[in-house]
Image 1 (tube, rainbow, N blue to C red):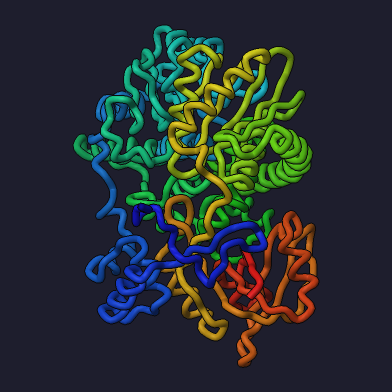
Image 2: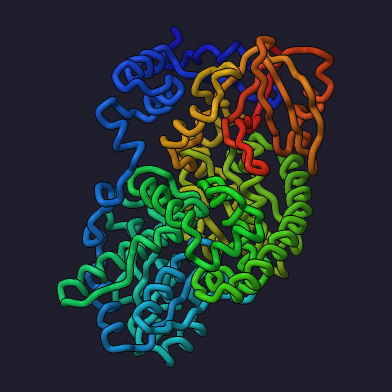
Length: 588
């Protein structure tokens, strides 16, 4: 007898295998009923109600969900272990005008975390030393020589977005207090630091485990401000720093749930005021001429901030985010933009080689991995993400240099990759490794790559990775082209921000006739489609020719298709129109 839970729901619009090889899954009857009831209670558009119902939001909570307030969602910083100690030491250092150093990771989260501290201190007339390790020469996190050197010249070292597993390096900071503000998965023991504030410590409950490091730093500044207020002292405005927290939250792929939604929603509003010279210069060089969204944080601004740490000078991103000088900001933004272009070229070459190697090894294992000579360590993380997206499997990509390989890993929902890598490191197959559920890093000896990947694959199989295949395409319902209005787009946007853990709604357009279709840019597809009743929509499919969808739609010969994608407002020369970001298609 087949159990009810083993019976797959009927494919949406009957699409069992789309042009991209995916099965379409839509809302079930229960979700439809919940959405209709929500619509009757709130008078919101049905498409909006479908999205809210899918998130488990009831009528009484709709308004609060659509307008997340930081005052309602911000946790008490003191709920994190060591927070009061960390803030007290920081406040004391500020009061005594001690020499403070900030040791940060080289990615967006690390750069934003450092900038939060540098900007806050500067507004009190204090300048801190910024130290970001070189990705190639020093690797991730604190190292003993750097910490020893900083300790000789500083009274307090703040390690942000790193440090939780750096026992030996922190021990080298003799005679200087070290405070760790991090979010990476902790080990069984803590490093020798005055305070380790990390929601992912082994002895934390995990309620705030979704925070990025910049959010942890922000909470420390909230607690520092409270302590200074008790002492009768004023502190810099915290709300004006939320643009940095928002950027880090999205770029570090933190789930947009709970307080993270408020951080991003309010941070985008701050960013829209164009007050931070670095972000203004970066938006200008990226030709961002509209109000920023979470998409822009993750795919337009974030990669450029990251480019310095990937293939250029490691501190460029943090310097850009923290500078108060518009001229310096413009120069840094131009350099980061150029580095990002170079990064894309390097990435493309590594991606092609890694995918070919992974395909030869087989894409049906619990882990997809590749390793190559001289692959730039600055792009292996991005390539791992591409492999993960292409296969819906956890992926590891390793760049080899001599007898050592340095790799990055990316995971899929439901598979804790960071914990698995940390275990393989504890078993001695990796020189070191760690991270969080969705992303991690590792260092491995060349002759141990095969056994390490075999062991990692075994651990991931236990978590269910072996059963994964091409991901179902989940749809929030069906729309007719005439219903896809700017008003609807704006109503849906009120349910944002969208990103990890809170995807933007995706709709199907059934039985559409294809009108004008053409290739644009490098491998993208521009499509006009209609329902035969006068309503017409424009769509763009990025990377459509990397799979079969581009060619099939180009050669449609009058055939009709079901189309699936996300709605967005396209602004061009002062005009606004609805555009579909096309993700998939299937013959009607």
